[in-house]
Length: 224
Image 1 (cartoon, rainbow, N blue to C red):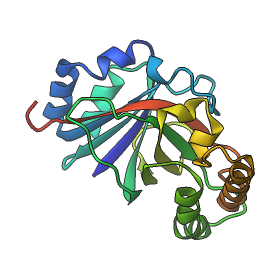
Image 2: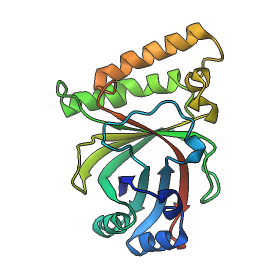
Image 3: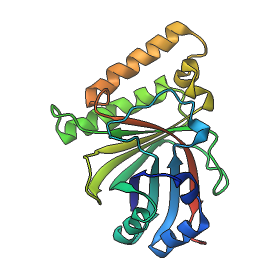
Image 4: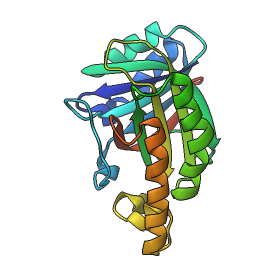
């Protein structure tokens, strides 16, 4: 089972990397941890969108074969506020994993999606996963792409229907050509951006979404 949580609060950049926190998660049944933190390394990122009263400080992914309750309790103890979900993970574009606990050399953008009123869940999934996935990979300079569809919420909070994880070159924080992979060609940039925007509009990702630039880390908790 994969769980994902949005966290708010100060000092999370230190807390989420702490061995003591990892041991508590492992004791709660977690086997693996992914930390996506809005830290100083991505402070220059220009693309930021928030629907919340306060921007999300971190997104945490936790893998477990047990119950979600103890894991949710541990995370509630380190953040001022959390929203959590059980998700179904798909990884259309894989990337190599760096050594345990080290930062991915990437801008790790996370988008929180919501189904628009005019679409059924089945239509939304078809437009997003079946039709849009190829467009996203072909139009952007992503080298890692994960789609997480929400199965159930594990905390109260505003509705979220999916969380998308994308890895970009670090230059993509401030360089549109680096973001779109257009090689300095302005016409190609416009073509790619136009194709992407037309595609995201078919499943409501042109509105009512959050985009959170982060740094990504992974930890194996089985030895914690």
